[in-house]
Image (tube, rainbow, N blue to C red; front, side):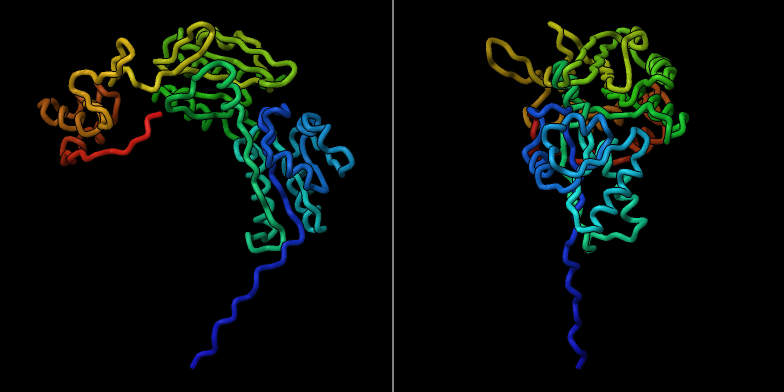
Length: 332
């Protein structure tokens, strides 16, 4: 009879790293958990500007300030303090996992042999990222598909950034541009504009928010063809609308698509002819597949019309159209 397997107990946690997202930086938009984590911490580590945002919350604590390009140093310092048994709040503006300190910290931890069962606990405390807060200040630009791209080429090759810009511009995403410009990086926003203008109308709405929810907040609404002329810096986030985004009464809005299915008249919501509430659009996947298969047109013609790869269209033409059952889709 085999001896029972002995399972080693998990290591007793002696130190802790809390990756704290501050949101936009104002106390009103700091989450309760972020505030509690800072209060709980023995040591606060972060970029000097971010520490200044929570200066009133870190009095009496060990505070370690680092420069803009010292992200790895912040992570290494946090690990050193946690090994000493301290609770460390490593702070980021926005969300620590969105262009923040969570990534470099895990890289340092993994290189040091850390695992989740190690004696150092790691907690990620989310905060609102710049795209959330800037969108809230200008209206509702993110209510359809969107993405974020950083224009910083300090760690990412420019051809990689350019390919991503071209892909999302072509695909008609709403796009949030992070790190759009600095004192030394002035041409990247111009190149981004050049790429977008290959695929987008010059009058596409653009919002530029600088220092959102901070004392020097500034909001500009402009258009794609004028974007590079605006006052843009490292503290700015640029929101570029899609082909349906509009500005009305000073608010930037991207429709979700309700007008494709519903007509609202006299306070009543009615579906357009051929549409059903709770079901895909007649031009949704199944309806579209059936329509192109019945069209008698070839893959090359259809690919040109729908701006989709010809090999994908060819595969769809050969596929069986699935039956559509009831859907429990949340539309709001």
